[in-house]
Length: 560
Image 1 (cartoon, one colour):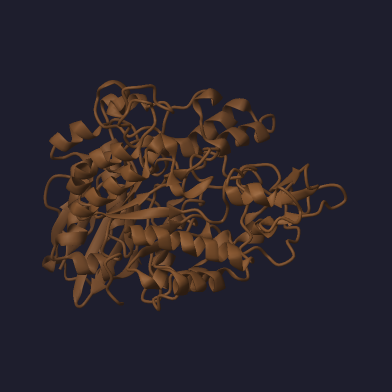
Image 2 (tube, one colour):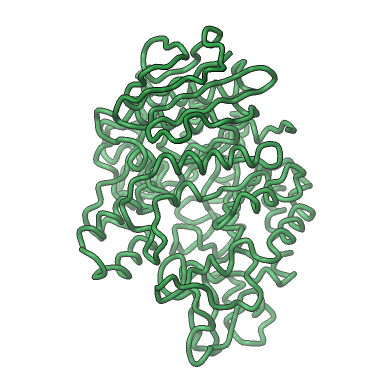
């Protein structure tokens, strides 16, 4: 396996709207981020993935871009961005931008021209189709509920939008579109950024002919079935690498909805023809049902299946591609409320256990803002508390199909807004996020879960994350943690997630009890038990590598 700086990095995702507000308008901004860079340096991360900061009407919180080379008014100015970039670089922190090029805003100048007439030169920048029997051109449904087509009265045709109707899909078959995207990417690279996280990049090539897809009994078939891993996606990404990515030393990660392990080997291959790594969603979708409303249930994660999914990705990509390691991001509920235990009794123990399990795997780990503090889901009670378009649309689409209380509970459990509540900096009003009225409610538990308190306490979740990151980046065990081969232990156990890593004669063993009960760990017989030493645990004391009862949410790492 070839070594690379991006394999040895730890990445921290910032959702700018909710990170830190410097001017009291209730919305996070670039100067707020700049003011907290020393905090991130203290944590030990060396790369920031910045969710979109481009100009946007904010129909989908910045993922609807109206100008790729300007900054959103609420976030500041390009001068503010340049200052943030310079300070980050001075602290040894790289900046990765969110590249959203499957679609634009309907307020982007390209789309304004495209919809102005059927013969406009930019008409073919987007995907337009004639009505079929007076209705939508096919049966595709949007990620955000409803049809994936919007009728345009002026020109009498439909345009495709896999997300909101204010997010029309770009037509990547048009060479001019691709070149315009590459020119924009080059502009940012020349400014000095260090990479791209590519939003839904697996969707840019649509199935030829845009045929109907399986509806699974619902009104619409999910548009992912007609867009994921399309016929030209690898051709486009190889062209992107040739035109832009190969000319700079960048970190690139593709958000690849619908990706399989075999497809991932193409996107993130070790030959470097496309991207460095992908985000896959098998593990985040594990508790979804195979129905049109499948996401919106409060089903428990099956740990045996969860371990198999993560382990398959570890073993199948070993030496042929590279993994990204994540449990949380701006689209996922808080992992501690989903896989862990967010009660006062077990919150910190379970957060440390979950973090250990992830950060000791092969791949590049991602920390989502607040994850290092064990921030939890928000106690949503009323629809008016939500800001997320997906959550609001889901309620409107599925109300009446099952009990109201059950639907509201499921949306509260799975809503993307759980990840988007303001960062909890201290116990002052609004958690120190803003002096104004926050754009979305602050979680009321901020008085006990906040950065100021945890920075002062040696046994805090924050300081545990520091240890994890230091072990991966700066310790004598860095190579085995980053590059070592992976083998799952106790695959059928429904409480313990244990595995070993091997590299150059060295072995690392990780045992995590992902349950609120004691559970027995069976040490592999072939290991020379007395040669192992403990390098990390979330419980006090020294624990030998042998058959033993792990305490609830206990995690231990040994090495020889």
